[in-house]
Every structure is written in structure tokens, then in C-alpha cells.
Length: 396
Image (tube, rainbow, N blue to C red; front, side, top):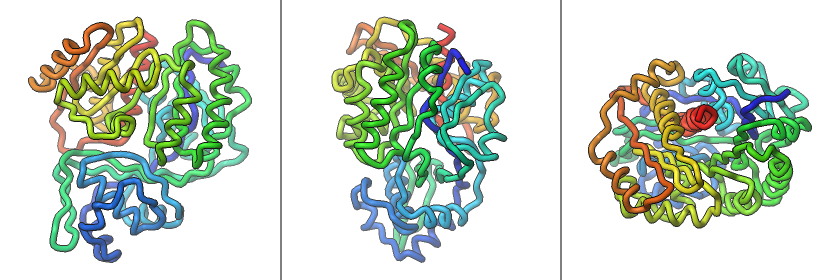
């Protein structure tokens, strides 16, 4: 198999949980959870269902997203079964492939697991290589909450300041992330290569081995091929540093959302503070040591560095993700065009103008429109942005 766009490194089945505050309130009572416990470090171990509820409420109170490993897979499934849910496909590369399919761009996926849901839901334009020897299902459970969501915990309420989602995983195939023997040949023929997915691996030694194997394939790519790395919610910071150390020099565009940017920075990034954003961009670009840094957030997306103007590719990513935000899985290219006509809030426009002025040079910053919707979708927005970005890069 060969394709112009190759997307790796793994995918998964997602259980998208329908928000139900009453279920969470009952769980808080059942597990005797108090609001004082929500001040525990966000990186604490998630073992069973009580820890899942604690992690979710703590993330919700701060309006944060992310991904957490759950040690007990039985507890994870027990938690998921308390809610209504929708089965979908996940993983950055797979959701990017879905977006590319909507935009009439075929791709080749590298998968590490497969089952009938994957075969049924994969878009027809996406071919795949799969390293698994047999079918398996290890769902990622995703809970998204709307802005203003309220959950009573004891005598207090936990209130979400903004919409976001928490991803809960225990996925052995993605933890191993075994590579298909044909991946090297696929990369060697591709014009665009997307790398992601190491965050599900359990330890630094395993990640180091796998990233070195991927690096060997990337080093054999065509001279003109473009490599995009999509960062992710690593379970431990040292894992993130291993990926950076092994892949730096092989990545052309390093992309991340605001949660991931804050992990590197070690502090919260105030998205509407131009001076803070400009400083963060320069700090992250220097830290990563890659030609081009991309950051995509709820307010704006930007690209800094490199020798190409990525404004139109960023806009393609922004509009694709915004269409998903407003219309969920059913978004269409027409929806994407429509959100492009929406007005942009003045404060976001001013931040973009000011950051570009402060940094100067090779920076492009695209404000994000805010469509009115009672049911915003926060699952897969970064992945859908990635798909739109890749489509924009392919077509530039």
C-alpha cells in the first residue's frame, strides 16, 4: 500500500459518554467524595471507579481536559456502563483520517488494534495497515461536559467554567504500539506523515524503543516529505521528554493544544493575554527545537517558525474543528464553509493582531469563531483540527 498521507501510530474504539450530572452526583455519594479531595494533584494515580470520579470532578472544576490511565480496566468499563454512550473511532490519526475523508483527501492509517467496530466505522477513503494478530476491543471512555455543568458534592457544587473532556484509558495494544512491517515502506513513499500516539505507552524504556524505530523510518523518508507530530496527554511528564529527545530533528511541525502547552511551560497559559502568549510561543519554540511550532486552543491557533506561511493551513484546521464543535460527528464541508462566515469576537481578534506584532517574523495566528450551539462537541476537536491542517498543507 502507498498513499500521499500516512497517519500513525495507533487508533482505538471510543465510548463517548453522554453527560449526566445525576449519575455523577450519585457516584459522589456512593464513594463518599468530598470537595476537599478535589485539591489533590491532578497527576495522582487512577486505580478504580472512585479515583475516576475524583479525577473527572477535579478536571471539570478547572475546565481542563486531558487523558488518564486507569489501572483497573474492569472499573473503567463499570463506570462507562453507568451512562448512555455512543461508539465511535478515536486516536488522533483516526479522527484526522475521518476529517480528511470529509474533505476528499485519502490517507493510509497505521493501526495497532482492530475489531468489527473499526472495520464498520473507518471511512472508505482510508486504507490501513494493522500490526495486530487478532481482534480486540479496549475502549477509551470519554466524558465531555458543557460549560456551566453542575455536580453537587456534599453541600457544595462543582461547576465547569468551560466545556472540555476527560479521556480514560486502559488499552494494551496501544500501550505496546507494535509497528507493522510495512510502515517503513509507506513512510518512504509519502508526501505527508503524521506521528502521534506514544502517550498510551506505559514507561520511558518502551517509548524510547518505539520512537527510535519510528525515527529510523522517518530518516528514510523522501527529502520533500513533511512530518507533523501531534502532541498528546501523556500520563507522566518524563514520557513526553523521551519523545522530544528521540524525535527532535525528524519533525517539521510540532503541534499541541493548550493543555499540552501548559505541561511544557509548567504554568497556566492565559490565552487572551498577548504578552503571555508571545512569551510562551518563543519559550516553547526554543524548548522543542523544531522548525515550526503549532498551538491550537479554544480561542485561536498559531504557527511560528519555519520558512512557509501556514496561515491558510491553520484556517483550514480551525474551520474543520469548529464545524465539529457545532455539529458533532455529522459535520459537513458545507458546515465548515458556514462557520467561516461567522464574526470573530473583538478580544480574540485583538490578541491575534497583538501577538503577531510582538513576535514579528514567521508567525501566523488565526482567531476561532464561536458558533452558537446548545450541545457543543469537545471530543476530538484537536484531532479534527489536525485533519483540517493536513488537508490545508496538502493543498497549499
